[in-house]
Amino acid sequence: MLRSVAVGFVVLLTSGSALAEGRYEIGGYGGYLWGGTAHAESPTERITATIESAPSYGAMIDVAVRRDAFAELSYTRQPTRLNLRSSDGTDYSYDMLAQYFQVGGLMEYRTPSAEWLRPTFGGTLGATVFTANDDRASYEEWRFSFLLELGAKIRLTHFLGLRLRGRGIVNFLTDESAMFCTSGRGCAYAYTGTAMLQGEVGLGAYLSF
Image 1 (cartoon, rainbow, N blue to C red):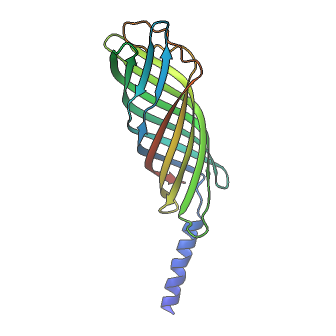
Image 2 (image 1 turned 30 degrees about the vertical axis):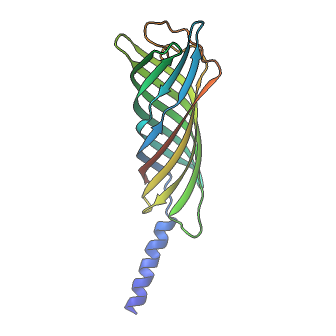
Image 3 (image 1 turned 30 degrees about the horizontal axis):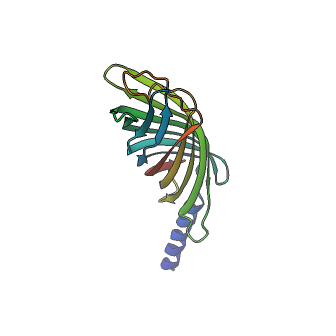
């Protein structure tokens, strides 16, 4: 009798946790972001700009808009370096900070055989802010960007979980860019129509309430 009651109590708690759904999720993560490469030309030379791959970290806020669908606001930060190589053989490098402000949506998919595991797919739009510093000047540029994400949520409890994510980032460089120019050579390099691609993998935790 006592054994039956105990088993029933455990089943009740387990089913309650599985069915509990939070409307809000807030979390943070750490990851690694692969840098992108862009090319530009002036009347006298060709420049290749490469962002070094480096660790990244960020945070996200999700609000459920319907079952298994969330509106998401996210922020990602990556301190790195920018390397510039000119067609005349000269190289130049300086510190750079990349910040990604994004808003969009996230879908999660239930797995009947494993309620604790939910694959996810998302897409967001926003801006990437590149801030760079050399010995004489600072540069800050805002560029339109969008992200696509594949990942999974691992539900540890009804209010705590882990989130795996892999993201592809597209940054659009559609006009002249001072930041991507070699120092002392002027900054009239056009990037019209150039899309700079980056990739990121990350792992984080989130709270649901």
